[in-house]
Image 1 (cartoon, rainbow, N blue to C red):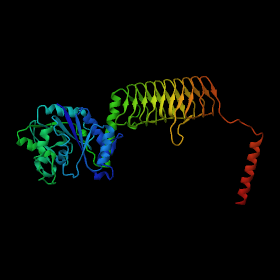
Image 2 (image 1 turned 180 degrees about the vertical axis):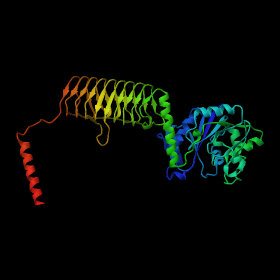
Image 3 (image 1 turned 180 degrees about the horizontal axis):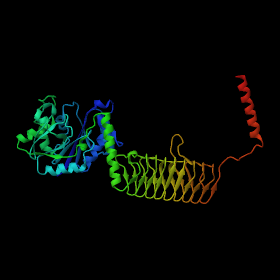
Image 4 (image 1 turned 120 degrees about the vertical axis):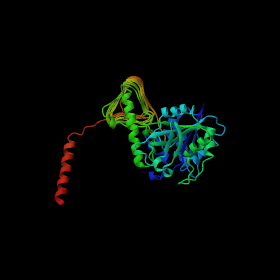
Length: 450
């Protein structure tokens, strides 16, 4: 049976103390909303409906930045979770499949958990995701009769006996789409908060003779984010899991707690990551690479056997082929570095193509920006670029060519040529000694006068 996702993302998030909608605050470089969308995407949904409210334009833009295959609907008044889900009704009109309600501020629901809910839905009309809470606090309680779920009771409306229950409601619900909206039609707001609770559909379902059950997950999956401290805790939780997964998958980390991953980082087996490395969004590192200490990578691809760092920065569009070496204080942006090439020290390579086995000397800069346009530098195979070379793009260095140290390159260098472009040196005999004596005399005179 096909699946539709309904992701609730209308809340303002007052406790965040921010103008930004709550679901757009980030964990591991991605908005909370995107984490929820990624979890649901594992089900290959036919439709994804996002219910937005506060900052709806920003929410929609963020959602479409990750996937344009979404419907965004507006909840103009926040009257409760059932009211929020109801706003998705028109978008799912005629949809004949299962609907799963997720939350944009609950980023850690796992794909395996959603699979288990769909499996349970094959045998029950409504499936609720629950967890055994170490401290149930003010969570809604799941009232069970064996494997059957009788009701979900909000804390405000619960009796003392119901508050003693430790099985709690995550808010995630799965039901056939038409059944879900039919049940919501029966929800009222006669409760302590005056809101339309989605949780009320369970008791309504039971009165209609429909079956309901609970799928349990680890409490950590249900972590909701409502404040900056909770956002920080969630970041720690994500990084802890990402580091554990990397180690389990054959990555060596000398100081795992100092390595930070993005939500989409991929690291191949037998790669070594030294301390204090940051992976921002869009990084793929293949097997057997080495990422040395204090490096920062974003939007780049590092091939097998390559070495990056220490203190290197790979920016978006950096493409490193096999066996490339990027050394200390080197920055690479929007450049392809072919197999075996080396950029070992203190250089900036931007908007460039570096050929196989070329060596880029210390202090080399591709001068790629004229104040309006970006221009490309093309360097062929087996090229030796001398230290402190300025490459004024657009410019091409042919295969097996060379630049002399301190050269400014403003025109193409043919294959096999040596390019020298620097001012002629002149030595002024004895001038340095005379100049120093003059300056020292002036300094001594000024000292006496003061």
